[in-house]
Length: 325
Image 1 (cartoon, helix red, strand yellow):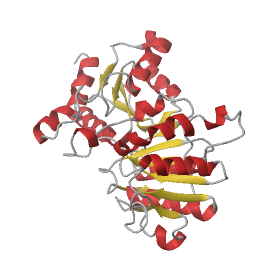
Image 2 (cartoon, rainbow, N blue to C red; image 1 turned 30 degrees about the vertical axis):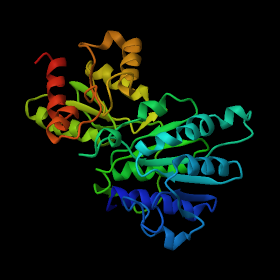
Image 3 (spheres, helix red, strand yellow; image 1 turned 45 degrees about the vertical axis):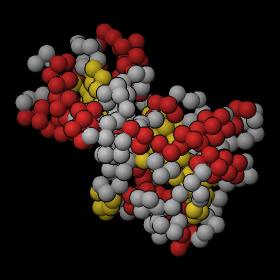
């Protein structure tokens, strides 16, 4: 095993897959000459050349459409958005073309494409640069949605995403690119649609994904000292959703908390809540608790932002609530 940064895990995954398959290429804003806005494509222009690592204009609709069209001629593009907040002007290409090509062509065309980049908040970036769209994409049949939380998962999941014949939304975070973690020296992949139990416990299940799961780890450490054992599940893939892992955990702990960096109305935690209560209601010893951001655009003020974003204290309060402690 070696210890590398999250951004290095992303770069390794893309580079290894591009060496394996010449139909794979990377395009996006500043991915080539600048080595990526967050240096996730460092050195790739030198290795693969300007025909396979392509700097684009600031035109998300344009280069997303080019990438989708190129899948019909046998290519497998990786599209990097500087942030998924910028993908909104290209949503027509993602939702109406990439997600629907296979069905509308009667299976004549596949759309093996990965759209990747940062999601969620990253400090004082304001209301238009601090949004989480995982549930938007997950609401679209034809798309797969992946949100890793560490370098090991990021590399294995990205390699699987690149090899997948369907469009995959691969969501990262500016605040995770410098995170370090152990990654195997050799080849490995992690299948999409499989959650991971990061920490086993017996008293309460906490489900999360992406960078906000760190707050669950902090809370679990505090609660362990108080004699409360938390089981933490990292979904890793939002769609397809591995609900069975969640169900089996709740059958054991009888309590469920879902921590998600998203607005509270109609999100991923809402879907999990519905599925758990509809399938194993009798196993629940307390109402399910969702922890989300405040139901407002992200504030710029650091004081307000701290109140807006969920944290470990919120998790601790929720756990004690369902434990009736």
